[in-house]
Length: 254
Image 1 (cartoon, rainbow, N blue to C red):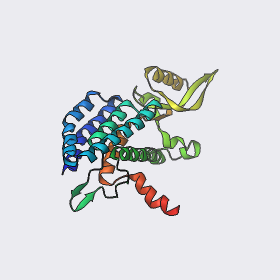
Image 2: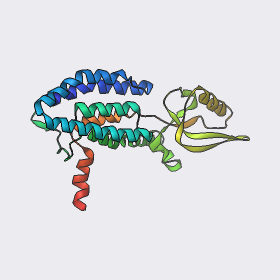
Image 3: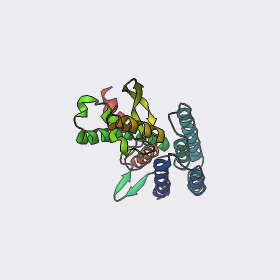
Image 4: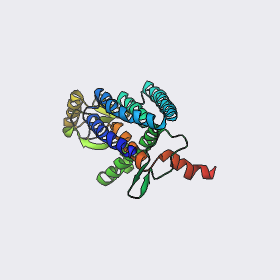
């Protein structure tokens, strides 16, 4: 019962963080204090119910996740809001919630030997991000099938749109556009240039002069809050995807 209550408690905060991250690429800092204040009920309940063993597990969970996300943040591989959410999860849900519902026990797969729920959420989130390039490829294959002969790797990274449909936002250009006398050279941009008003004006000017094609490649910026939320739900319902794949498809062949 307490496991289900924890999951229901987290859902509105996770959904709001996804909405805020999609819209502004920011999540308000006050959200984490709003989570921790009522979430402290679960922390106290678990300590009273399980005593010292839970305190040790909670401490290990928080310290491990704190160090892990701090390193990722330091390497610019993780956002501050993402790191704070993972730390909140690590203290409120240091272990997998076990939920009995409709004759099933969740998670459906075995809990990993090292029961760190937040770390499993992160691992699931990383795996689930693979869905994005696959989805982009399928979309492009339907809309621009001939591009597979031209720039097939682009099909996994972005999509084509008209320069006249561009709006300042969170998409980035997949290519750099460099002037060279009477032509424009294009070059793959690994990080992608942010689309702002100046960039849009420049691209429209190139298109009107027939220096570039009206249809250009852009890449969407997917906030990691969405994979984290998907990873959270996957961990609750199914379990740890990395542990499942490793124990069932890798270890047997070693």
